[in-house]
Length: 310
Image (cartoon, rainbow, N blue to C red):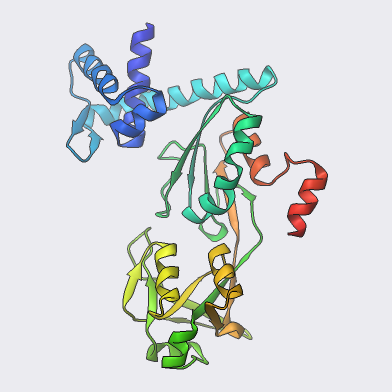
């Protein structure tokens, strides 16, 4: 295979996997116009249309899907081989594709980006924020980050955080006007901020448990959202009761007394965040380095201890 042919196929696989010329061009270090020309050259050489393009989307044709199915594993195997060769030389390299929840991107990945890059300048991170629980294997990701209960059983999973609590809370103004719920059933008499699951579009039923008694409540209110910060903003503005993971924004609002926890004795605990990848693939050097960074194993022992204490 000539170099130009390899470049065309690599460009094609990148476009299909990112469903976007702009994102694929950024990943490949090309201009969108140069990438479009490369794909046109490939289609002309093969004599078949590979991609259906509109102003808003791009998707493979039947011939394109068949070509992608055959070529993508080969391309990823070559990337892995290059990464392993770099590791043999004492360094991690290549592109690392991670599919992650927004919560994990904010709390775990974003604060460590500069540190990881300084330690591994030859690794290109391709971070896709996705709360819809996409299939990381079908999407050709190297790994995903999810809440533990959402990780498939045939995956290798690495715990990143302790278990997390789900808590109900509301602003002081809201509680002053509407009273404080004492049991989950009381929520039927309150305005609540609903969460829509991106995976299947269902509205989330709020789970509670106390002394082994578990119940789920379907609530109603002025807002339904699939965005955690929008829900938090609504609670801060007094729109109703919010039910959410106890993350950094929630903790800060509680500390400032902008929000008050309710139904504390009914709170449940959910598995924390896990990074996972398929059993059939070895953790490439770049992925191993990334996991170590997320777990702060790359820090000196003294700094790790200080982080744990905080």
